[in-house]
Amino acid sequence: MRFLFFPLLFPAFLSLSQTGEPHFTFENFEQQVLDFNPILTPKITEKEINFAEMVLEETRKATKKNPANFNVADYWNICTVFLNLKMPRENLELAFRKMLLADGSCEYLSSLKDDTKLDEALPVLYQQSLNKCEAQGNLQQKVDPVAYARENRLDPALIRALAEIQEKDQRYRDKPTEQAVLDRENQISIEALFEKHQTYIGKSLAGEEFSYVMWMVIQHSNIPMMERYLPVLHTAVKEGELEPNTLKLTIDRIYAGKYDYQIFGSQFGVPMAPEDIIHKVKKEFGI
View 1 (cartoon, rainbow, N blue to C red):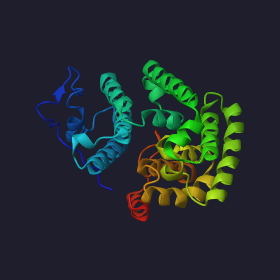
View 2 (cartoon, helix red, strand yellow; view 1 turned 60 degrees about the vertical axis):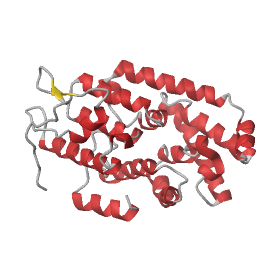
View 3 (tube, rainbow, N blue to C red; view 1 turned 90 degrees about the vertical axis):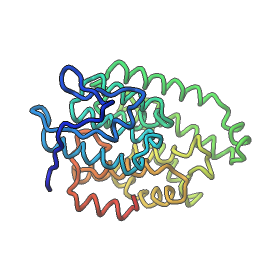
View 4 (tube, one colour; view 1 turned 180 degrees about the horizontal axis):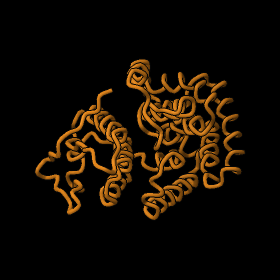
């Protein structure tokens, strides 16, 4: 594969810091990211440049080069790029704060906290944000699932079950041994729900609030279970029952676990797959 390197050309509004690093601003962050081209430096390897270029190009495609189209997945990916490129802390923190303001940020923090080194790069901010998300989650659990089901015309028994699964999925995330027991229990519960409904428990059956619960259990399971449910997740995404980015995360986790490389770049520190494999997987899943 050829590695393409670009000269240090930045838009007028993307200034350089005293260290020569690009300086991003809160107001123009999205456009600056779309125009950003990393360069090779003594502290950055060709592999890291290649990874950054791939993710940035994916971001341009996903957003159609429109700053207004950025979502939580795009901000998370930019955090990964900045971290990989060893960007100044101020740039990384800005990208992270942008991610926190996007819808679904708490789901990303909770689901990917074992697959990132952002907690090491931004220890205080990351932990504060995660604690806040977990506190919000606990408050949400105080909402009566029956009332939620009634308001949204959903099956009360199913919503109660999903609420319990959701709480158990996050109960001991900082204690792997204890959480492993709950994860296995949740996997059994999800298997039973799927056998009963014969479909992904998404927006139609669970509403927006609980549409990602089944995916979270699958994501926190094992490679065989993720592979078994991958077609189910794919169908759910195509039918609008689940957000597309969740499918990318699961695909990356499967490929990282089986082959030690990934397709979309969501797993920090895991190298990208060969270009032909990336193209094949994206074509297979219509991504």
